[in-house]
Length: 74
Image (tube, rainbow, N blue to C red):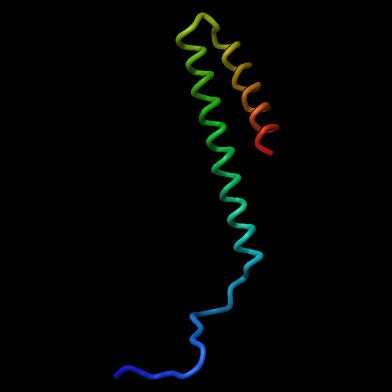
């Protein structure tokens, strides 16, 4: 049969809110900078493959985009 409790019902251990905040901030930063990396890679690949820029120019563009994005997204 169902048990009837009176009083507060606690599910498991108490929450560690500072740890939750650290995990959430890490996830947001990882998603943000992972997206930056993927976009910079795609733009550099497009510049390297579909223009006459060449490999070294595409690598330089990739580095510049990552540095600029890192500064803007901080």
